[in-house]
Image (cartoon, rainbow over all chains, first blue to last red; front, side, top):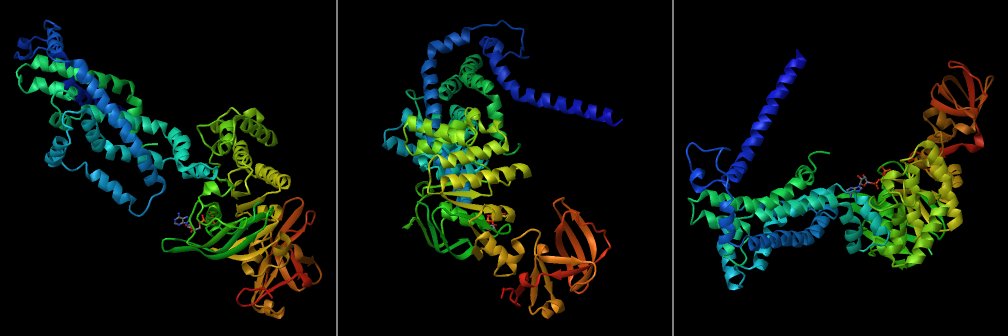
Length: 276
Length: 332
Ligand SMILES: Nc1ncnc2c1ncn2[C@@H]1O[C@H](COP(=O)(O)OP(=O)(O)OP(=O)(O)O)[C@@H](O)[C@H]1O
Ligand SMILES: [Mg+2]
């Protein structure tokens, strides 16, 4: 009897899991399908699921009307660039907090995290004015800098939790062996933390890639990444669902593929410390 | 090369004073063992010498120069950790070579020294393995190899053998002693195992609650402990302590007698007791004897000594090997 009940329970959980998974995945699937419809079928009621006339026309139009490659390049430069700069700052910072903590370390960590609780729009005006005065509007450098600041708290936190798992003895051994602080971080800490750094890096790239608030508000055309590319199809042409879907599909495809290949690293990164 | 002088060294973690004040003189080439119960501050003292912790007060002189504020990397000391603390991402070769690489030695010198160290420590066949693929004893040897290649002024060991099984512990103990004879460098060795302390040390420092109870050679500590703590800590099995009226008869508040300094007889003696448990080790037998007005005494007798629990025996401590202590626990 007990076994039957537990089998049934397993079945229920499996179904719930699938339903939740599909619910999360459905919008992406729908966007993907819509991108192959004509504008007419895209808004047809009842909606058509698979049996419509498939067309590549939207992709052609999108390619024609905007420079996908440039947006993509901008996205890559910003997400990878901000991640690398972020790591350069965050690795020493996380080292200090994990291996040389003071009474204030916990407060600093909380304070860093608290900046993520502030609505970004709260600092939009000052940042905008600074960007305007310094001539950073619509520049890759300016945006990369903002993305570094936006994601830095998360990078530091993730690295901090990883570093905490590294035995302090080993770093002390390096010190006894004559390593300077720099060499200790380069030759001992970083190689040991490679899995952690890799997942942090992936997460940071994904967050920067998908970041829309700042990229939309601080860019116009030159530095506009893929988020702005999607937005360009949503605001003035809100009714053209099929083209908007094609643009979205193009924008999320690279990161989706990256995420797919790196999913093990990512899951490990997001649950690190919780399991093990 | 490796004399170490501690002057008035103290250490507190926040409010908690772990080491109130310690003076200690370690001369070059000496094998010094810090021994004491768990939590007494042995590791802390070693880490202060290493520079891994900052002192709260006092000075640390190495070879006559003040190193109190010098970072560990520049004290010319090597440390072997209880956890081995090998670099898991480097091969055995990489681990042993690391201190040389940090010292900026050139490639041939590194290669030669690593090969030499590996030969001395029987690690030649394992040079290309990662630490994760080694046994505990081999890891310990790698940690020692990493310490010796740099030819430091002194070696610091923090309970290096406590993760090994008993047989390996005895073997490694011997290896470290041989290494000391061979290298003739100062070694400071932390342990809470008094057998390791007795067998390896030139000089034992007995610590208790952050204070030095006594410093001396193993035999000095064994023959004339300054107080009850040292008397009870050094020697195995533990010294027997007798209080009360029977001690007063012998002219002290507490009388200590070592298990090996007891004469047993079936006919006459100072005290009469009844055998409780007899532990036969083959070479020795330890008898736990219950004596009225005295308490339980442990006696060490020959391996062939046959008694049964419940047997009556007469016990006489060797008069000239009694240890007498006053009310404060100090020997006189
Ligand atoms: N970083 C620290 N912060 C606060 N207290 C500490 C710290 N390190 C050690 N202590 C305290 O100092 C005391 C001595 O610790 P220490 O590690 O030196 O003991 P030990 O003699 O080496 O013991 P064991 O034989 O168990 O290794 C302990 O009470 C410990 O709790
Ligand atoms: Mg210790």
